[in-house]
Length: 553
Ligand code: ATP
Ligand code: MG
Image (cartoon, rainbow, N blue to C red):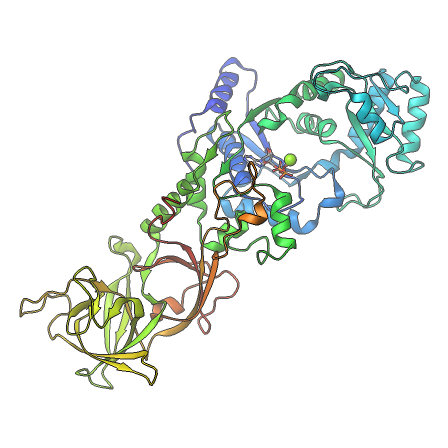
């Protein structure tokens, strides 16, 4: 965990509250609605909420905000918990559910009715919209606003008993139909929904709204700082109104910060779900998805995601963050920690004609150039090798610092070789290159002084392994796929996935454990696929290239 408290405006508020004694312990919560997988924006919210608690010796709850049963499911509940754990955070106590407070919320609804602060309204949704007024025009009181407490209590009880149809009636707070803040124009507290709930089954046929539920849940749990994103700023007066008008004990306060919107990314669960439902990606955890599960499968690390969340700070602005910052954090982490290996993506056979058929040298090389603690690996060197076809040319000018006929190149961690002859098939395709080794060049320059200009990766053809390598790139080719005139479905990068079925990898890579990350030298960072990789059938996903190639796009 980070040991220095993130210095941001929220930390300043917490520090003041602790200093003034308004709170003695910081209690925050992360309240996802289980209607999709967590994405990078949620990772930011998690880092803010868990981070603030952690930095101040407090606690953070995980509370599923499950007041919309139609769109929610156990699959999402399980995935969200797994993602939070994977990011390295631990919530305080048991998992909490808004639905566990349904009875208490209902009792408080009855209380508001008894106090004359809520009423049952029979306006249809269309009528209610019309009565609500606009930003520039005051609303009008519902004709049902002055029902007696007795009638309201009776109707509320019958609503709970399931006597009325969906949409027939709602419970509304009696606040002010001319309030400039539309959220205070007699907001809805309960609506009838005849759907079963993943936690409470068929116990309820009406469900509380977010506004009526959230602050009260915070109060029940003793939350001190209820942190949400800016779109809830206009809901804060309502949040406070309920706490003032109900006999609650806790007094949580709501604070807002700007949502994280990385470029080239969408962070709406509805749109992400559409990508899944329409088969644009393979699932919520497709490595191209900005979901936590997708980033995990792509080979992003929890440390890098957390670093990124810290790096971008927490502000009250809603700006776009360059996704290159996230990619920078990933590269930095993997450069530091990922073991090196060699992979040939586009194999071209090289036969070393001077090297005996049955000879095998097992070269011991460092797993990482400056991390002795990561140990070493064994590279089998043999007569037949694969190099990348792009690393060879029969003829080339001086700028091409790889293997050229009649010229030399260094095989990474092994010998310098010189190319002698090209073998072509009937149609003129190069099928192999014949070459010879320059003796005495293991870790040494050639004694004749003719130094090779470049270094290339290679894999033994007889001892290497065939692998599937999935080359992922950004899912969207527009930096703001769902802003302005853009339709996100029209901004899909057609080259976001290219599968190489017959790449060759050095043997040490085949025995990787699922989710282990590597730098394939000269190619980029790759991870053994979480589900499909096995030593017999190795599968790697490209996490990210070595450099940012999108710089000027
Ligand atoms: P939707 O995608 O339907 O708008 P949501 O993103 O608000 O939903 P929730 O499950 O309600 O999803 O979010 C849980 C918490 O994560 C909330 O406190 C929310 O403010 C926060 N959150 C969601 N998206 C972002 C984001 N892009 N940046 C920062 N925090 C976010
Ligand atoms: Mg939400």
